[in-house]
Length: 95
Image (tube, rainbow, N blue to C red; front, side):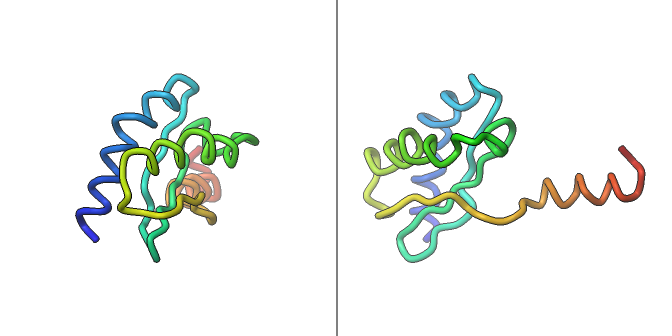
């Protein structure tokens, strides 16, 4: 699975992140499970109401165009470690 991960991460870095960065966001590969890449948006993209559209029209399209290492691309659901850390700081009144 290491080679698959490397391929998808390189595609994200080369083709996806530059496009998302123009809008203050980024994307990272959370995991590959059952030939599906799970992508997490960060920055402005993480709270964007168009995140699923961006995933389909940009991220998924680019990944599937440049590799056959995965068959599908989905948005990683759930709360990121970044958000947990932010919430903990708020509760401790550090922010």
